[in-house]
Length: 262
Ligand code: MN
Image 1 (cartoon, rainbow, N blue to C red):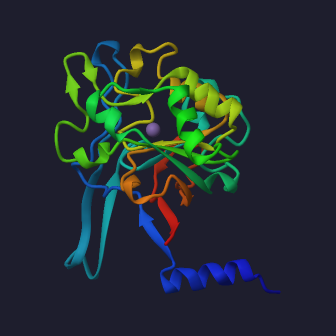
Image 2: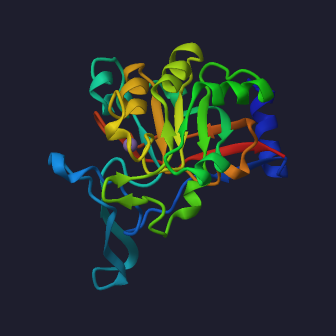
């Protein structure tokens, strides 16, 4: 049995005519994590913690390994539909049961870099998406829609979470935009460069956290804390993003790769 598509893929990777772009940040104790408003008493996600077991020493003379722990939604990570109450009754909605085709798919990269720089609370509208479509063509079903904000370039600075007395100020989505993407375009999910898929001020949006509420309600997924979106074309990249197979996992840190034709 032979399949020239796969042979061509392997040859293109070897020759460099398809390049692999790493859309992931490095997991380390400084990796920023989502900070929810404290006044509600909501639970907190563990930051990434790593502890050496041995490193060619008395704890293990010939081997190096670590223990680590973190919240499922730490660093570059996958959001499964079970993450939100609106997605709780879907079938196959967790990291261990999601159909595998959720993990590989085409990307549409919408550049809102200028808008996000001008206004950290920028919310992407349906009109903004439609203006992108007028230029690049309609978003195909099962696409990942990636919100390019260049926000990942702020990692390492307080400007990344951009926390003020009233919470985070980072870009996100108008609720109608999520409804449009989920229902009119039937996308696979959305991906963002910010710490979570919703805007920093999303606890005050209606509905609260609209991307989580409406995307997961539509049984669709999310990718957060992506980087290097500036290395992707508006269309044509293929995203590979399989989360860890945690039983009933709501998400997991994920190595997200993009295949890009040169
Ligand atoms: Mn998440």
